[in-house]
Length: 310
Length: 276
Image (cartoon, rainbow over all chains, first blue to last red; front, side, top):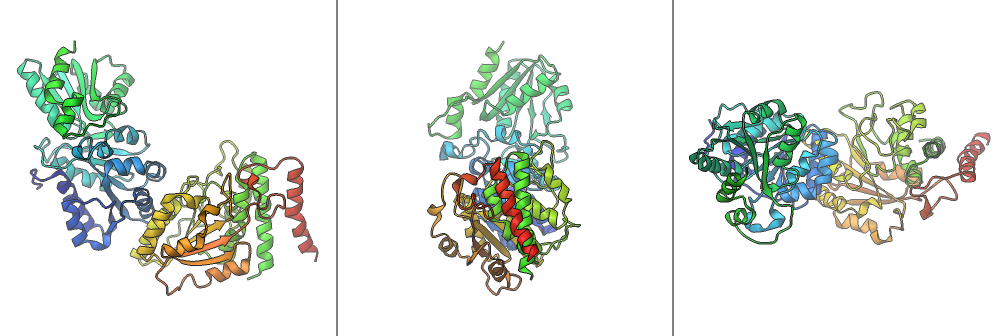
């Protein structure tokens, strides 16, 4: 049984290690980016491991060739470099030929806060959502991470998992049905906050604060961003009075946009407030807490925005 | 190997390239003509191991046409060995046709979606690694253009392939000396670059069947651990006198009298051969 108190990356890589030990066709390729769990993989299964170096285009091209050759590649790198630099390769080969490849992007949003904007993955959801056949996950806890490793392995086409680092409180039970794509936390329906990744924990704090003010708020952890089970999601959303999306991603093309699309498609007139990063460049250096404060993603700012939203 | 027969085959392929591109009103004629002899040697000369009736035969050599923007001669060769009916060639680039301006995997015999340059060598690496892991002895052959060789991803792949001793990997560069707007002199010294990246290099005349076969003679049992780069010096537009070596013929389409001249040149030689 998975220990929920492990680093998210370790949870994922522990599962990938187990899978690779069972199936010798699983190949792990890294773009010279490390993780504790990767060391174990390298040590135990050296023949199934390649460090391709800082060469993201080659990394994805090689993964495509491995998949065509009957292997099951898991590729790993810093999200902002992997997705942005090698987007064409991901688009043409992994999506275009529907290849069985798992892309593990280290860093979702401000994971690498102090490294600056080059390391911030804040447009990748917009980019990857636009690719046909791309399954996209963003886990909020280690239990989900472990489950996703297995789901990516079983998915016949390309899977993109963007993950944070660190240990986060458990959100989902081990027995949660991860094929559903989302989890609902709490019974409140005055406001439903939809979030993904570690911002789910932020959303839970906001929900807690709002509930104390008699605004009964629940949270949806949308850990599978594509495909979305639209019917099931909308049926939950429509139980709510107002919907808020909260994400560490630019306002264009992320969770908020997804909800707009889904609700419009269903002809819903539910009020939707998108709380996300504004569509502008920034160069301030700061840790996650500061970046949130500057961009209105901290608990107080979000709470205030919801309270003032009438 | 009957070189005369292969030359006739090549002439036939070049004629198909002309008709396909004239019929569609579009295509990359110069770059398709330059690699024709190489393709004929690979598929008609007994170099590649394949089964046209079973395109997914597990033991086949993998051939990647990385210069996928110029698939016309490749299509003609695939048809000529039986991957699909020759009649399909007339549909080239017509609306709804399977044979499109860029090769894709819907077409029997085609391994990757082509059309964007610089990807094929990296993909070939993945295939080569898979083969080595599974102890399968098929080759992985990838054809690149020299214009294509400006892409950084080509050199990322070249570095990796040599370092990982992928000696079942062969890169053929259709070194026709041109890209779209200019000559490719900025690549010089081209063969030395591949050597510096750790490849075995063979420089040949890409229009000489003797030299092509000589370059491939030992490919299934080379002692070297290095991947092999065959730099084939070719002429863009080869086979049509007014196109040969001219910058104009990357993606322009011959018209009117040009078509008639080209048709004559791609027929007369054949007739002459047949009559003598």
